[in-house]
Image (cartoon, rainbow, N blue to C red; front, side):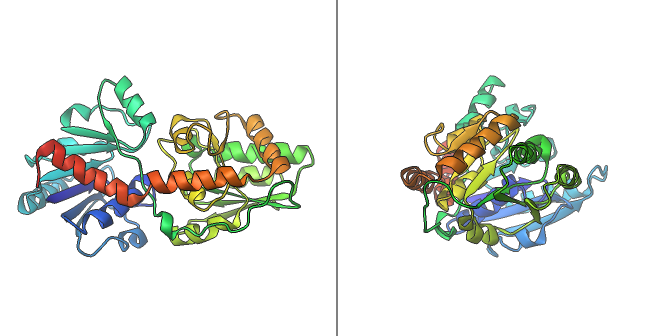
Length: 347
């Protein structure tokens, strides 16, 4: 089977990171090509793609009316002649003319759906995304996002009850309209107003809201309680999650929650907003704590409650087992290959 993946850019977002993982699994058994349209390239992430993958970078400038990158993309598709073309992120379908079957992965809860009718198959990264897609008038198949459970260092010591000091962590793109780090900062200021100060938060990630968050931290006098670590690669995250006492995902919009699953595989307690995607990852609350989305007061209450109660070894072990069983990238990649074959009768 010959597979062509098409995406706007290779940066450090969830869709791009997952695509790199899928390619590296698929290329073990099939021929795989990756076509990157725009000049949005994270070289570190690009370097992680298996050398057996045929990579073409067209380096189109964002907003450019130059059609040459699109022409070259179609020329390469003709030469490669894939059995299936897999799109990631919307807006590219109308520019691709190769007759091969075309599929699309819906990576978030805000994709417009205007192109859905142009695909032979739609894949949703969670049941929550699948339900939203159904409300938009289209059927899709759920294929959960995947991680590398065996590469994540596990927290060895589980401690119940109060501790003298707590280390919190939040991993994700610094973009508050979706990721909600401002909600978390507000929650910490509420704790401080109640004279609860025995904690420190590390924010891992880069993004458009960095200055906004820096300003909030300074204004609320939380400089000694919050550190912005910037972007860290996956191996750093995988080896450091186990050093924290609580992972917090305060998102306003989240189709799945890869970082949540990673924390569960590190046997770190998790606290997430009650969005459908993250709630699916923690099995509707059975495997983690949750707060009312966008409610910093409720988030502060849940953090305080955790600090009073401590860790629960039964929940942590169950969360680990659930994440490892359901969110392994090997399973994700194989499910895509099976879906291609079943839909298009490919060998």
